Structures are given as structure tokens and as C-alpha cells.
Image (cartoon, rainbow, N blue to C red; front, side, top):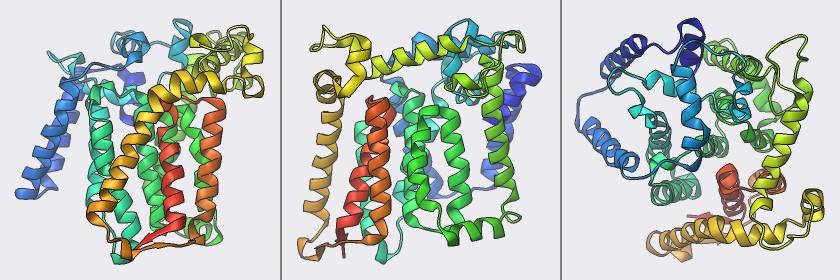
Length: 398
């Protein structure tokens, strides 16, 4: 992302630069990989998953503004204040700067979805190859369950928008958190900033990150700063680039905070803060189903959002349409795993206080998502966190 971002503002999207970067990456990969059957299995695994890109349609926002924004970037000259062309460009994901690195001669736009594919396949690979010792059977169970569930539910890879990619990263971070290894704190910090750079709504995950704020973790963090200077530096650069990108696109340090916007007199391309406020108000109405309402037709937008008046309509048009299927598939796979792989006599209903705080924070994050942007693609990870933390709190497999 950093390479794509800074190379764009240095010399634009350059196909020759991308080719050299790809060649360097291939050489680096093979110099650090053993040519054996595991490499063969890896290639076979990636090839099978790759069919999810070429056998499905693109997601709804692809032609609406994702692909249009990408086209704006690859067509010189470099654009400042691009949010003035279309206000949707104001919150376009920085993930697009990774996609610009896959813009090659002849193929041009055809590799647009490859970075999304790599994130998803890496998540599945992590879940399926990082089983812990025997005293973490419950966590191993969740990793196996999630790897199969994600492959079944999210098999049409080209339908992934940036919201899905951010949610996949949050799932990875969640497992790093429950593994409770101090040395993972730095990678968690980096991945959290990366998820925020992909989509700002991933800031909701900050509630769950609070679980890391323990005395021993803070002491370890500051004692290990020198040892982990590289990943800390990358994290800082990534965080700065988020502010810089928002400023260049909209004239605001953070586009979703109108109070962070500069005046037109200071930055001539700055958007009107009131326009952003109105737009994000409309986004909340859309997320809560105002424009597709079946009941509450007589309600004004203000009354619709007040006192949870929107909930009944949201349940009818979104919960039963998107989320109920997700939950049915998840719990069906959960039951099948229990039946085939777990001996009930070795299952204990316990109260594991180590996960109480995490369950509490997962509940808060789920409620915040539900209260602000209750769309499936913005928060399916928080639904999973709630059930997984509940599972870890009350069940234990031996």
C-alpha cells in the first residue's frame, strides 16, 4: 500500500515500475522458498481459490465508484481534490493503491481483484496452518471451523468489496489477540492500521483492541520498540499516509470528521464540511433501510432514525435477506463439526474468566455496528467475534 501510494504521487501509476516490482517479488519468493511438495500444494490451493474470481460477477459498488476511482488514478495527470469529482471518492479505500501495482501492459485492468484474492487466501492459509498446542483445543476448533465456513460462504471472490477485505483482516487480528502472545502486539498494531486504511468503519474494532491494554503488554511494547523498529516505522508511515491521502482527496485530515476539514481559503480543493455531514447522514439512512422501507413509510428521516424506529424495517429487508443465511450456515457447520470431530464426554461447560473482558468488548463492538452502520458487509466479523468469544467463555474441549 505504501509503495503504491508514494509511487503514485512521485510519478503516477507506471506499468514499467510495476513489472520490475513483480519480477523482484517473484525472485524474492523463490529465493526464500523450498521447491518441494508443499510449494506444489500451495500453488494448487491458490489455483483452486482463483476460480472464485473468474466465475462470479463483481460486487455492487464495483462499477458505481470503485473501478471508476481506479481509472481516475491510472489515467494521468495526478489528481488532487478528487473528492470534488464525486463525493464517493472521498472515502474510496487506500487499498486501491495496492491494486495500482497490478496494472500491467496488455492486461491493464484485468488483475484488479488479485490483491483481494491474496488477502483472503492468506487468511484461510493462516487459519488452516497455525494450530496451537493441545492446551488450546478450543482455539484450534474455531480456526478449523472458520477456515471451512469462510471458504463456503465467501467463495465468489470477485464479489469482495473493500469492506469484506477489511473484515477478513479483523478476523486475523482477532485470532492473534486470543492467542495471547506478547510478541504479536506489533503485528496486531500494524494490521489494525492497515485495516483502518482499507476502510474507516473498521475503527469499531478499537473496542476489541482495548483488551490488549494490560500492564504487562504495555511494558513489553516499550521494552521491545528497538527490536521491532521496522514494523513500528511502517505502521507510523501507514498512519501518516491515511491522513495525507484524506487531505489530498478532500481537504480534511479525516474525511468522516467534518470538523477536521480546512476552509476553502486555506486549501482551495477542500470540500464543504456540511456536504460531507449531509452525505454521511444519507449513508446512515441507507444502512438502516430508509430508502427501501416496507413499514414506517410515513416517518421522516429524523423520526425513522430516532428511538430505534428503523429496527423493524431493517429486520424485514436486511436481517432476513443477508444475515440470517450467514448465521444458518455458520451454526450448521458448527453442529457438523461437533457431531463428527468432538466427543461430547470431553466437552465441558465452563466459565473461563480469561475471556470475559473480550466477550464484553465484542458485545460493545457488535452493538456499535448495529447502532451506526448495520449492513452485513460492514460488520459480519463483529457477529463472528461475539459468538466466538461467547464460545471461548463458556465451552472447553479436551
